[in-house]
Length: 170
Image 1 (cartoon, helix red, strand yellow):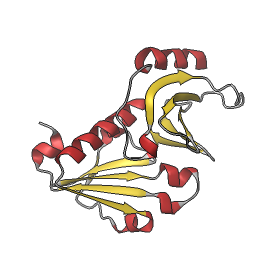
Image 2: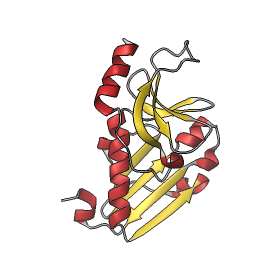
Image 3: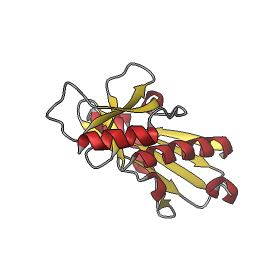
């Protein structure tokens, strides 16, 4: 079963070169599936792609198809690889059209209020989520913080001043 998942991932996504992410040291540069040789006990996981730089975690696909990082512990960022790709596309779109981008880190993220926001379900967020409001988008990235049990590594980006076109793309 795991071999079938690896083959299917490679058939569908293998060789896809991705734009850099603002987080996760740019994310994987290119998607490819590779079964880990040194973690036989981790049935269901496989590597998802080449890292852009040397870092303390790798990108993996979990047993239920989640896309995440694997360092001191496994943290699923999105419920699927499609969610990661949607999040990359949304970040590119938002950063291209938002007149203001604010970055919050650590405990400052707790000050954000979401009463007028709704989740962006297309990103299938787990540790990383996106929220859509009347004229802004908010991306919250907690993967590295969870992976290393370091809340100070939480990051939120607020893309504000987006009109309807900037929010919907159409």
